[in-house]
Length: 318
Image 1 (cartoon, rainbow, N blue to C red):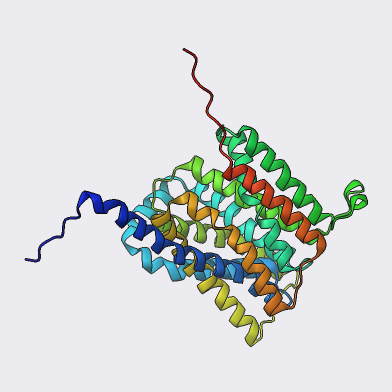
Image 2: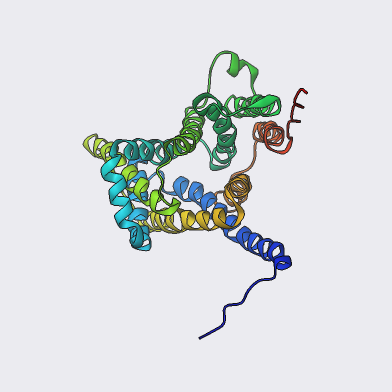
């Protein structure tokens, strides 16, 4: 029988550090694949209606991941039987509405701007967590939320004060703001629901629920004669959205959470904005606008205030 190696106590921090470093490639690749979703969705937008794209992406990703979580099928079925409405509601908000709004928005705005606006979602999550879960916000997080909100308004108004005063906004960017809000609400609802299932099997359940809800919207599109007309490039984009851009992305995200922890893995989401800008420039010929840069600067300041600066604990009275 092979001997089991026993780690010396002094080696434990080193082992943890090596394990943590191993999680970064998975996290970086995860957000690179996620950035590719914006490019592929923008590419296929003229050939496929938004809810049809949402349905096929979620349904195919669910089918790809379902065999991987086969050991959890019993627990997944039990959860689905005991809390079906919650599963459907959370899946609809975080996957159907969030994704569908992005695809709608990309019909009227560029991928770069969409990626920058989606960087608002962690700030929105903090505010919603305060309102829904009662989690403390604090001075710096509040200032960060205000700065990030200012950045979002600069982008949506294209840097024009008169557009802001007269409420003249680009409809595509409003769809993306709605998507960012849905993702934040989804994150908070996941914390509140406490489904008690491992993350990847839970994601598969939510993908299935999201696909079911998206199907109803897609049938409405078909009824209104909004049909898909995919050519070879469109089919390739859909394959990317369902495979590397969804199934593999979620798998890598789970790997990074296990090794880095949820907080550090989630903070790397901001890499997505950078990757979207680079890929959109290289593949779609997009360029950054002045208002994108100004708005992004406000959002970065907001993120730093909300996450990097820690409030000093109030000393207890004797």
